[in-house]
Amino acid sequence: MPLGTDTKQYETPNHPYQGERIATEHSLSDRYGLKNKEELWRAQSQLRSYRREARELLGQAQGDEVVARRSEEFLGRLKRVGILDEADELGDVLGLEVEDVLERRLQTVVYRKGFANTPEQARQFITHGHIVVGGQRHQVPSYVVDVDEENLVEFDENSPLADELHPERAEGQ
Image (tube, rainbow, N blue to C red):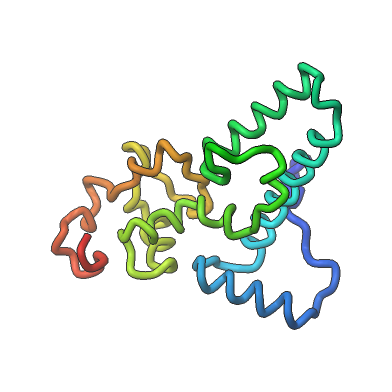
């Protein structure tokens, strides 16, 4: 096995059974059409890394040029992917929730734009290659959609779903 292939990109919960946590995870999995808890844990780990970086930057000297540049780059990255609004500052990163990260997934964007009737159907459309972003086919439901790419999400022109009369298309799309 090549080095680095089994490195997990997420942390599992410390305690295997906590009823409240499990209920929350189940609710989020249903709402966002996640395949398994691993996808949720990845989003939570991503959010933890954002918060960790924000705390690190907030703890450093604010007058320092290097810190100011790193802060601007970090905020720019989060604003580009739509996790933060244009008016948000570094301290606002600490108030983010896992839903903010999950909302930027291609699967959620396809569902919210009305291309699919359910998040699960959106996931199926993506994995079967019916969805393109700016003409580029994406088959990964967890792909993070940038704000400027959001209007470029559409059905592939060669897909049968591109026909507005297709029975699987969401009503009104």
